[in-house]
Image (cartoon, rainbow, N blue to C red):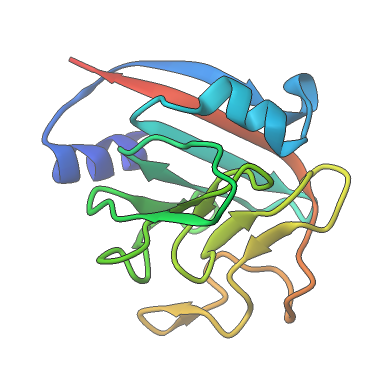
Length: 166
């Protein structure tokens, strides 16, 4: 968690006091409605994902998730993505316009092109998108992806935590 703590401190200039689990797909249910009932209207959330291919990554937003009928985009200059496997923090590709995307049929989605996007039940369906194999962060191809197409992957786990600051 040191990598995450440093990334948050550099963006928000606050230290983490407590991390509280809000949602766990394998316990609360992978349906987006379950994610929203546990996570909507809560600021400062950290999303952890373990893919079926054993990749570990996620994202942070200081904004809150919400259930909307239409796709709603939000700007958050504090948002970032991370890879535990590579021990790296990545900026959202287009953080000036779309750091997160909200819609009632979706779970957590980061970035305008869904850099990380859950568009259904990630445990049962291939709906976890890790922006498509052509995506690169500073020349690092497939930083978060494990597939070479847009079909999506499944997840073994998705967890969302609330971060409280000192």
